[in-house]
Length: 248
Image: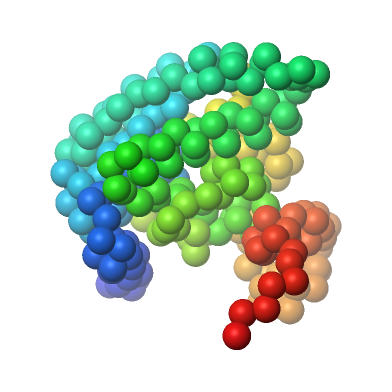
């Protein structure tokens, strides 16, 4: 099992290394939230191309727990990569001047995700870097992401990994316990948690997804029905925008 895990982790590193070398870029930039997904993705990037070539940026808003930035800083220090903090509060304030601006959890959360990705791509464009995504398979299949926000990236090193795989590899990578033990959260509003918003635990989601994929996407339980319905509803997030372009 250990050898198999090491092989799978080596494949991720090879993919990152190949993408980096093939792009001719000067480095990688990644949003480090203080959560396990971004921590694992950052660790993979450091192992693949060296920590001197990886920039981690935390993008907090006033609704976020300050401990998350501290956890991100500790992670980056442990990995030996540069860490910067950019508050998105001034940018959110600018958007609030839009005529007819309405503030709801849904609207503000999506706006925050897109602002964060815009800041990452600004640094990528300025410094000739690639943007590393942090989506995992469980969230990707459910469409638990913001289109052109946290699902935008130049490479997605962990999108093939279920959340359970993420934790397994993160433990192997010696990610700090403060990150491993906290409740997963996208940091979109005070007290927000992924599992609370989704309405299911990641453990149940992973089991349901594996069963669905093994049984031709035919639900065999109420949980699987819920997961399947969500995956079908959000399929547009996994697909290119509808178009009539024909490429020879």
